[in-house]
Image (cartoon, rainbow, N blue to C red; front, side, top):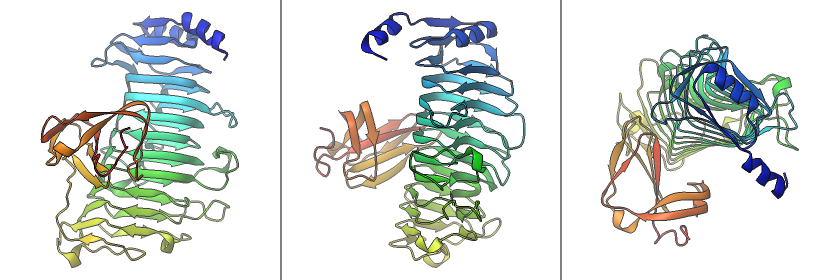
Length: 445
């Protein structure tokens, strides 16, 4: 769009306020670039659909009293959207999926620039392979502050098929009756360059996969970045999450690489990690070269627990790297009792010593550049910062990106704030980045 055309479109943009299901359907059909659809508090019928939505925001009028999209086979489906934002909406009681966002089957033209902020999806009716948020062929996306409860028992809270360049963060996922095949977050089908950060996933002990990089996708549904082929997932980073319960906290499936670091796990059984091949006999890459480091794991032998790592057939477990993880066996909290059996020797592992974090506290992760604090709980919580006088809190401004493993973790525009004192309070499901200017010179320039 040229500059003049963009100015015209902005000038003609409308705020479409709706208060009934009919008004919402009409507004969604009529919405044009630059429009906002603003929902008054109340309940609206699900089954909403729109193709080729461009540059539109759909939000509740009141953040603390969000509109509810109730029922339907799906709550909202957007095909081939570009630059669309949804915020402060509740989807409940859908039969199959809560939100569907896809490329309309046109794999060469993905959906792009999608933002979901403070979205709730709960109580999917069907018990099988049904997802709360499903994205297929979406490029450049953010899911921030979602709350998802009780999706399909064999499905995923958030399911990605052939999606690229995205971030899922600060989201709370809870399932009370997940089956063995169900999962929390699962990028697969050619998904690439996705960060899964600072989320909390709670599942029944013994069932479900918390976060899985890869999966089992039928051949016709794969979507690859240009020039790529033959992987379920690629360049997936899983960091700063809290996983409670489940059959496995993390899984690698038909991916070459993938980093899992600075997460806290409690009560996952029978395994903590799985290394699987769910595409045997196909050209899809075998599972190899994953990295698992600086995590804290509280497990308990006996009962449902089997082993720290489950290695499936036709994988390359010897290529994996384990380092600097802290392991504590709650049933035998000694060095020997807490030492896990791993497919390769671990570097600098810590066994049987008290963990530095806990599932219902603010996680404090130390780095050469400073501290990363993660409150992956549903309540506001405070944490002591003894060295507060030398730290600055980084606050994102524009095009801000955070890479905790990088020597200089901040890119884009950030501003700094002094810490008011030794105690710092974090809202529910939030993060704080504390930079030490002495060890990270120029990080906040």
